[in-house]
Length: 618
Image (spheres, rainbow, N blue to C red):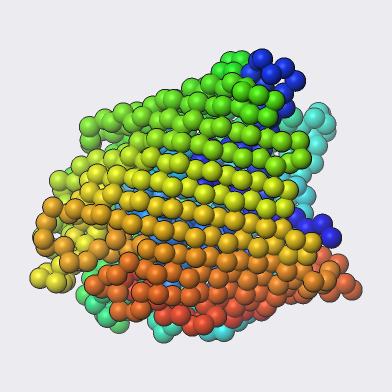
């Protein structure tokens, strides 16, 4: 029985593209065809408590650690390799979608996942090349070609949950030229519930649409999306025993063009305007106690690509300009706008060592600058040995060194240093990161093993801290942290099932330069050990089981009231009646064991959620 893979996972842990070697003349460098390995980092691909969003598939993804408040689709901090939420960027096309207020809102992306490819997680040299103001990692998406089709889903569940989504698209050749196609795509989604714990209600709505013009060598997309979200949660951001709420509205207008030309050459240009409004209430019972209003606007232009000069030499490059501004009731100084520029170049040299082996060397640099901080130059480099055999087995070994830098958001640097719930630090400097990494990828026709060992030094990393001597606020503080990590990710395909398993180990040594820090909300909120295990089983043509499990042993934190160990399970049963074509019913459960683990120290964890949904597609 043939089944489509569930998620495209490029060799993200290796941070380099896997290649197919096609040599006829072993004395000359040969053409390398970049391929994408299709395996599944998670078994389940849809959330249980809301409609699907670009970050939904990251909940049990071993490549990232998603620390949610309420649920991933409400407010989620996505961290990579022990970094914090502001170290992680979200990239669509060639552009990183920045929110200048706080990294808490990086993942507010009003794009229907049906319009995007599955997430790539860029680390090391690839993040240094393509990332923008994201020193540790980037979650990257590309625009899919539009095909004719659509679906409608209705759902209901525990905690008065209800869901409605509809998606439709059409693609047709142009009458004047059949080599070109024009496509239209639209989507509407809504979900609401009383929440998996008391005062954890939500009400979300998203509208998104795009027009696409595509040809044999190019694809142009014009997109507009709007998303409105209300959600509540006890101790949402503060550990003071209050029921906080947040109302968000995000609008995104984006133009993207992809162009292939010549041999092994292509480029992509992205431009966007993003507007984000945030209304935060400290106590829903007493809104006048403290509330804040923020409005951010971001305009950006980005380009990235690869130019092949010959079979042996190519140039990888990326550049992005961002201009942002903020209007806020909680910022007190004149630090309310900033311009950013990043330019990265990474020349690539390839040589054949034998009929089955090739060596690739990439060495380059990135330049970061803005009108508020000193400029910075970062070195980037890696060397990769690819071995490819005719029977489909392959091995990739790489060593990389990458530097990256970023600057803090306005909440950390532009607010009051002496009053309020969130205390800024006007002296925060540019953050820098240095990453050394060794990785090995093994591939067989039915299984794959990724492994990586890395050591990262973060200097002047902005963290939010807590002091028992001044317990009424969080403080933005710089910290130097050395992080050592090991990552293992294995996948195996059988006739009617697939299994994915991972293990991650992290160790940190920190220096805040102050004895006043008693606890860290983010930089020291990481798992010492984390294990994931997922499986998909399709015993018949009408039934499919999916299960994801995550076990973690979190680093001890003085603010965490739950246990440091946790086990989460998401389970779904999909029924596809043979009598009704293109129709299926899904029974799903999340947090099956009602785990009370606090993803963020001092913030209650999510509760159990059960749903029943029906989907018809065409």
